[in-house]
Image 1 (cartoon, rainbow, N blue to C red):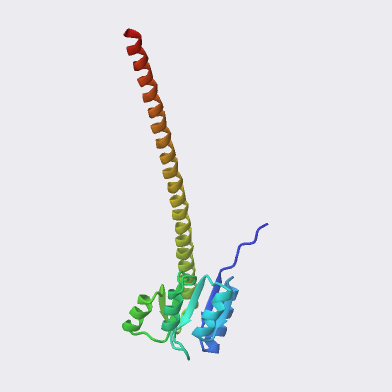
Image 2: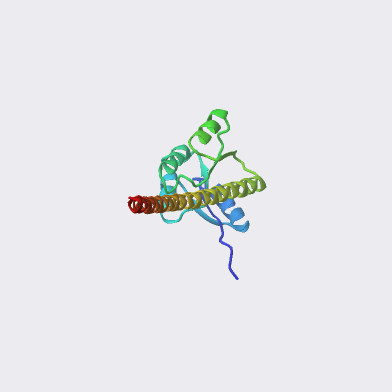
Length: 181
């Protein structure tokens, strides 16, 4: 019997209490959970293990969550990983900034565990569907390329057959004319 793959969630937060609580809750909810205490170590970690979703604090030492997200989205290997911001910043300007740099969601702390679980599941579903859509689009592109090649080949065959038929008719006409004179 094949076991279903556990989704990998990366939590990036410099607060050990927040990390511990989210780690336990998400692990108990069936996820494989990775942690990082700052943006730079998160980016390094993602080079080795690609998470399915990132929970990212904004206010951290070193590079903040916004800059971390900017760097993730600038990297073609990481840009499609959904990022949910978790932060105490609740101003609209901060929320808009989070969305504008590539975050898929924004939650203010303290977060309700059931709400964050629902949002995680929603964004994992969306991400999975986007991935499937990209795969299907690539398959359609490949099929279309093959069909175009086939049409080109068949067109060339028809042209060749038409030339052969034209030459055959020309020979028949010449033979007919020759036989009359």
